[in-house]
Image (cartoon, rainbow, N blue to C red; front, side, top):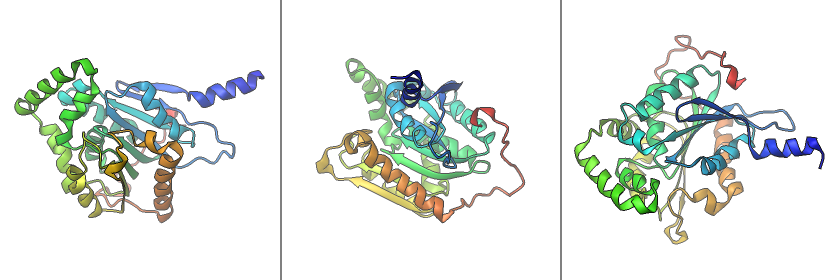
Length: 282
């Protein structure tokens, strides 16, 4: 195999990665044959304690289709101590995106939906989010199970007891505010929810109010996997396969890209514009 072919294969196997700030990495898009790139910049919020090798599979789904991807993680500590963890990360994400002259596509998985809401709360008046895609959306009631499954099996019982005490004694205002935002004033852009009825971490019944709230402000599509399929939490892409999974997401993205749906925010045109001078996105 020629050197050129080897390098091409390596580039396709691992897109260049840039460390942006704590908890965030930028995956650069792959070169497309036609040089026609989609307009959206993807922000990927993964599940609690997601390992890089697994998160990369989701990032690669987008980079291989010509999107730059900002991958944002949430550690157990960041979730349990949001004032110095998740909220700080959310502010950094907003600052980063505020400097980019891009339409933003959100892809949130599991507890990543909490951090997503924290970002959208701050970004509502400044950043253009054109699509929101949620896989295994997890509300406040699912955080205990999320933490339990984010640690090694040998420590799960300890984690379960510890988080139960934490939720009884700690200040959950940050998490509750994020959930209240999703229920009362969600960001008004097209949203797709993918969920399994066999999900024991994030029961579908708990997110029904979130779906109903989203329908009040914009287009919504749901893809619900029957319980008999026995698809566990955050394994939908694995069970469906990448092509079918991304086919569903991309069908939704393209439908509402053509519709030209514009979010109705309180932002006044000309009051604040995005700064196109972010070289890392050029």
